[in-house]
Image 1 (cartoon, rainbow, N blue to C red):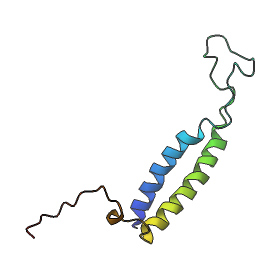
Image 2: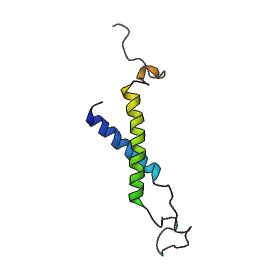
Image 3: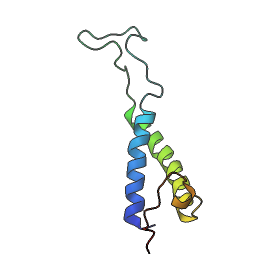
Image 4: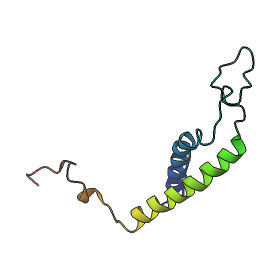
Length: 92
């Protein structure tokens, strides 16, 4: 796998994992009884973005390694997926 492709795949995986990690451990203002006037009661009291960025990086790294192994060792190829049509013309 070329390095540019590996970085692009990691970036996409990181971005998807960020949205997976964002709700972990979030407590709303209404849960802590500390609603600031003029804000949404469900808004988080502490966002902990540095911690979430670290968690996202670790999770994305694990997922990326799994995908890298699958692609490198061809554990799953397009030929293994039965619903992809064969686009090669029959005349050839």
